[in-house]
Image (cartoon, rainbow, N blue to C red; front, side, top):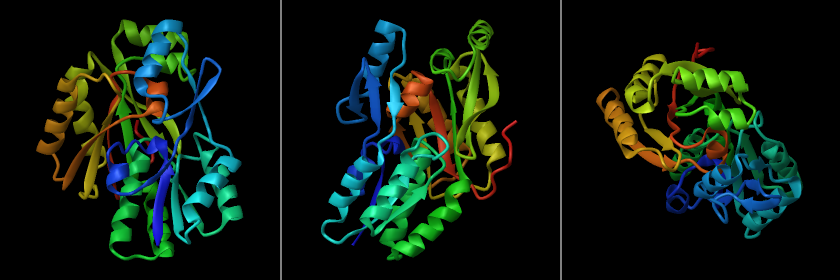
Length: 286
């Protein structure tokens, strides 16, 4: 039997259980203690820590030994594993998983070059292909062809977490806050880059972000789109994104999921994105 697994950064919420997807929790370091994303630490814990201390917790990759234990357990009954890994451009998770797979055997590792439900899109595609009766080799080949077609972007309500995480300067943060500038972030070559900037509050700009994204990435695979957002995001914003998305596209499925520890640590409360597979991604968001 073929089994699909992924890192907890895929942000698939209820779909993990529904699709029988095995999860490797990413580590979050808080006050010197190590926690497992989605097991014993959640976004609200991160918000509470930042509010109390003014400092962001750190995310930490699983090591080769952790992945070896994980894969050994999954393959003990003879199953073949296809593991969709968190971007190698953002973490050592993928490389550690590859090394562990070599030792365990019967494990394929795909570098998604993405995070959050950008990874999740490839996980769901793997599940689709599995249901179609594809072999492990066929599934992996199709996934690798799709990796660079994933459109993964978010709009960020505040620069606070980006500044605290070292992704922008204090001056940039102050300047952006004073002028009420909100950046969009996107994945390029497996790394986070800054895209178009919007002025005003996120409720005002949610529709612009959706329309800009659909215009730029308009050759989409209509199978599904994710609306992924951090805990605490105003429901009016989420609903507006969904309404504009449905009115201006024809996706078969529009799926909402909450962002886990990784996106929360980097972007903070009020972050929301739309993510889907596009056939022709441009080389730049600018």
